[in-house]
Image 1 (cartoon, rainbow, N blue to C red):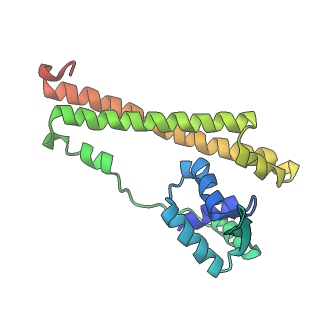
Image 2: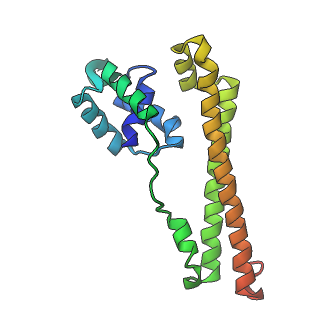
Length: 199
């Protein structure tokens, strides 16, 4: 259900077509909430039916048309209500840690591949989030600049700092996972005997 609120957050900046929204989503919100286009477009249509968005046809190219979505007052109220509601935590569904609990069922070489892939993934994400922070601090983040242009000056620092704070939390989580993966590699080596060393 959080997808609709991520979309409302983006549309609170400016009206967008589904195409533009999907691009903006991928370069901003997707860092904290993944959703493919196949989920975004149906959700936009559903939100328009529910009155959270206003949909209008706009010119696209020389003779084409696209649907542009604009957040409604009801949409703004729904987003504010969601922001003020307590967070509902989901129970874990973590395939990497589930596999880690049963690594004795696989060969040490495969176990090492699992751990290395985990390290590589979280290293990539950590670096992406660090780039986001750099862009937020440097004032080069396009979406943030649009949001700031529509934000009262007194609220701009909060708008920036809360986003940086979010990415700092994600980086801290990634660094924890990287260290856990490195410990996993050492554990696999220690439990597998000398034959695996250097492989």
